[in-house]
Amino acid sequence: MTRFGCMALFFCATASALGAAVCEEITHDGAQYTICEIDAVTQQLDLFLRDDAGEIFGQFTSVDRALSERGEKLVFAMNAGMYHDDRSPVGHYVENGEEIMRVIPNAGPGNFGLLPNGVLCVREGRTDVFETLTYIDEAPACKHATQSGPMLVINGALHPRFLADGTSLNIRNGVGTSADGQRVVFAISDQPVNFHSFGTLFRDYIDVPNALYFDGKVSRLYAPDLGRRDFGFALGPIIGVVEPAD
Image (cartoon, rainbow, N blue to C red; front, side, top):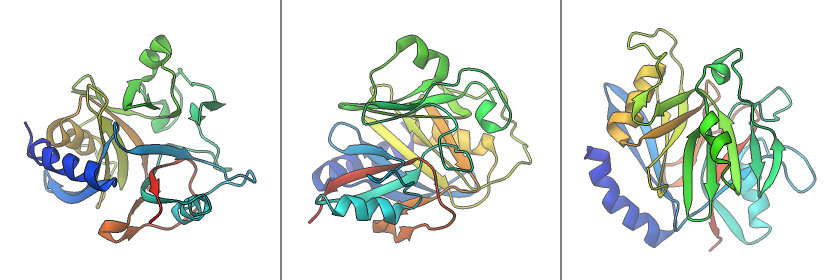
């Protein structure tokens, strides 16, 4: 078991008791990252794109304000997949059971089209990263789903196109899930890294069989317990943990 896996036993118990995501700053292979673990059984993980008026949320603070109007609050969030200039999702997107964007199964330009890509699927009591064609075959009934790419880890193996000496360096963020769908681990690099380094973080340190890349350059994190409320250009899809307001 990895060091993070051992620590997660304690952290998950603490997170369940407190109802909040547990985040920590770590170092892997000489690079610094922030990792946040969610218990899919006990914590509410939701996707957010537009408010009740149809306007793009764009920022974590906008999501939190909307939640406060119904007696809830945002305790963790991260940008959750690539988007067009109008902030609409590039790939498959489901929110509260409604499909906003269909699945894109074919290759294409950019990181999204670097197959295999994948889908994060949030269901009652579990959350899973699926390779896209597997997702299409299994057709899970997701409450929330967001497609992005490339996959970082596929059934325990790194994406075959990743190079250890890759020269494309960016701030990157993504998510990995355990085989039973109960551990959901989000990560963001705190310095520019390549895909290979980011993939090995999920495979070797976080120790999950499947992990999905969300984005680079615009990667952001909302983790108030760490003093992180990242702000910048408006985002597209946002994923976050919601709990009742105090």
